[in-house]
Length: 115
Image 1 (cartoon, rainbow, N blue to C red):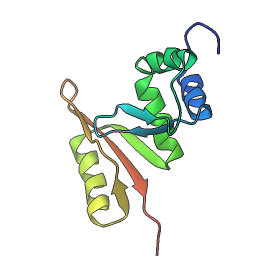
Image 2: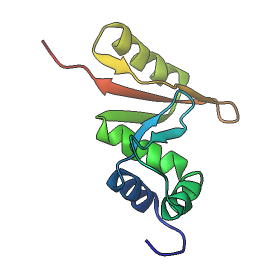
Image 3: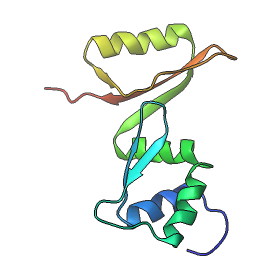
Image 4: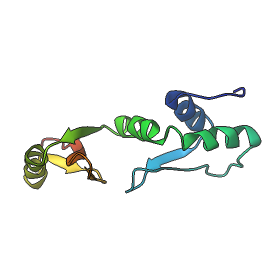
């Protein structure tokens, strides 16, 4: 890849193409490791840009894992998801984000397989 800025998809594809194992931690930060490999100068440039597109790359990772993020929920809407999680219909994928300024909540979940 050349110099310049990259989209979240380009960053994600480059890291995966180089063999990075990516995950989203409990704070929504993308973490990666390169099993048995060495980070090159070219990789470093992409890794540095990851901080600028972290949220979008995290969403790509979640989509790949079959998760869905319900963003901007009111408290009542979030409670409905909580009830479905407690009933075993959905699996919660941390973190649950509460936005203080708006009072809205983001919940990430995965559909549970039906027996």
